Image 1 (cartoon, helix red, strand yellow):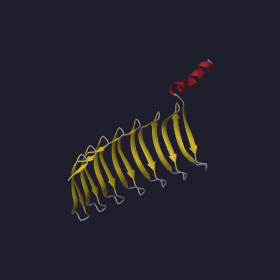
Image 2: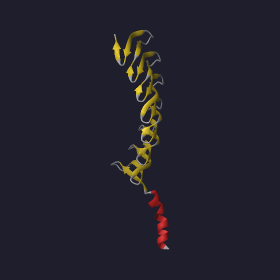
Image 3: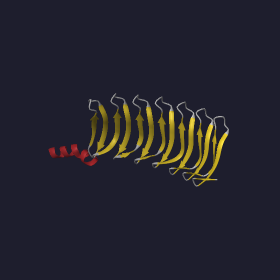
Image 4: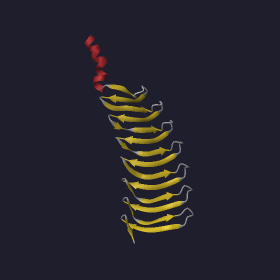
Length: 188
């Protein structure tokens, strides 16, 4: 009967593997990371800390593969990055932030490759750049803006190379130059 009780007690550990949380510390004794393991693989939430005690990151793992939402923080505690992961690849929208909390960049990912709209912002909130990606290569119109919102450069891309008319404007909206490209090479 005792053997049966022992088997029943430890059966879940045998079937479902062993889980543990391991704490890592800085030399000064403050917590550096809390890492969840299952069957000797990262499994569950991994939380990192700065020496001041603020969170550095929160990353989810499923048997050593990054999954779900990942958050990275500046030392002051403000969010630096929010990204979505599936099977160790970025999937969905990743947002990067300035230390003041304003959005810095929004990028679309699919299976670890840039796919979709990529937007960059100035610290004042104005759009700095917008482009489109297909399978990790720029494809379509890319626009750069001055910090005042005025259009700066427009370039058409195909398969990651300039292809078509590119224009650069000064801050008053006047064309500074125009160039034609085909397969990444300027046509004169």
